[in-house]
Amino acid sequence: MVVYTQEHVYRHPWDRVTAAAWRKFTDPASRTALSHVADVHTLHRRLDADEGRLHAARSITVRSPPLPFILRRLLPAAAASPSGAALCHCVETSLVDARSRAMDVVVRNVSLRGTIEVEERASYRPHPERPEEWTQFKQETTIRCRPLAALAAVAEKVEHRCAEKFLQNSAKGREVVERICRYLEAEAAGAVPSAT
Image 1: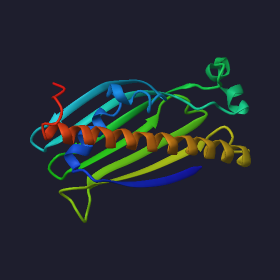
Image 2: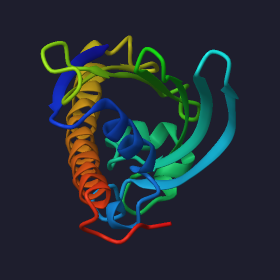
Image 3: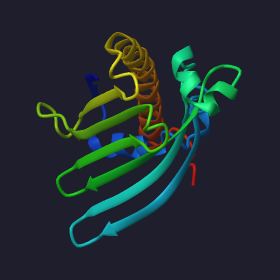
Image 4: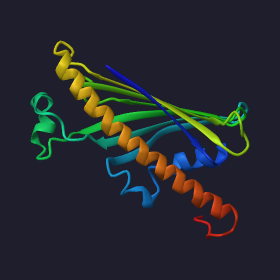
């Protein structure tokens, strides 16, 4: 099993960063940077106006990086793919608490779980030193290769390879959020026409 954590400080206020995070997958300009994301759909959302909380769930389909030969043999869909990649379906659950300015996101794969389990937990909070100006992002990802657990060395290589790809994609995601934040900042200042 591989567990890694990342932290990032967005030099933008919490409301702008969380708005950008919601737009990350649907922004047309993000498609190149986030080319591993094949599809995103909102499954449900519920606003608790009394508490100031939004509960939401989205389905996210991603393309895996090319899988090692041993995993391709375990996955018929991946074996059929010329690149050795597979489509993986994930569910993202989010809780946004506007009153406490907290957003928590959990993403888990729902397909390929017999082969690999991935769980990503992320939080967005006002930065403790500059809460009105900056946002602190924390992310923890756990990757576990199930059928190869008995073959610890092989499982470790697969988990580390997956972790490397997740780290690369995470950096791309942060870049997209930063770009959208700059756009939202310019839009608020009247420097760009509104998208509405």
